[in-house]
Length: 217
Ligand code: AMP
Picture 1 (cartoon, rainbow, N blue to C red):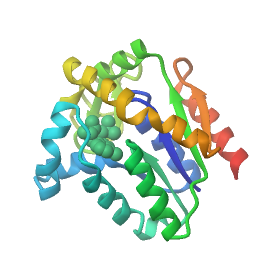
Picture 2: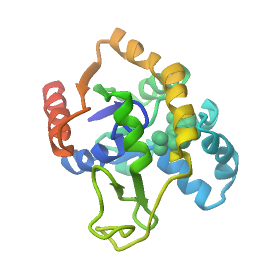
Picture 3: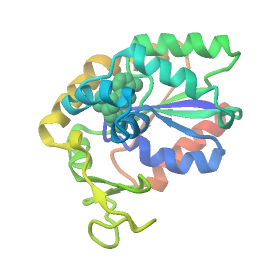
Picture 4: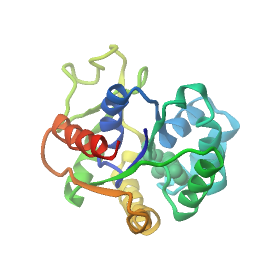
């Protein structure tokens, strides 16, 4: 099973991915997570990406495409994978199509997660991540039991630099301009599935996604 979770920053792609990968037993490929790790490790990739990320801009396509092409060749991707945060431009989507064809792989679904703008803003400003294990929390919608401490591993929670209000606005604009055209792109290919995720629990939304995916199998 190969599928994409498409949707604006704050739609919950990372949170839903964590549950879906368990259900389908496939890895989550989050380009944002890969880049954050690289920034943390001060690698060459991290140095290249940091400035763009801090400004809420997209990292150049050639950098991102190379990362994904290498990642999907890893053995854990043999039963499929979930793409979270990739593709984000038409050029990336074209490259993905090319890479999948070359490897005789088939993209089965693109799930477009719709969330109202005012809700996105709140989710992004409230988001907290664990420094140690990367688990996702939200001070408004999914608080940890002890403030600032991860429920899963006891690690310290932090706010992403790009979750500050000024950067969030920029990221939402970048989404509308550069990523939203992918909705039409995949609609034309008859592979797009829409879900409404402004309301409902995380499990409700995950169930909606699972139902869609079991229909395309
Ligand atoms: P995310 O965690 O998916 O919100 O990504 C955080 C940041 O990483 C984005 O604001 C971009 O700067 C960068 N990034 C992640 N994925 C991509 C991508 N597919 N193309 C370009 N930049 C990306």
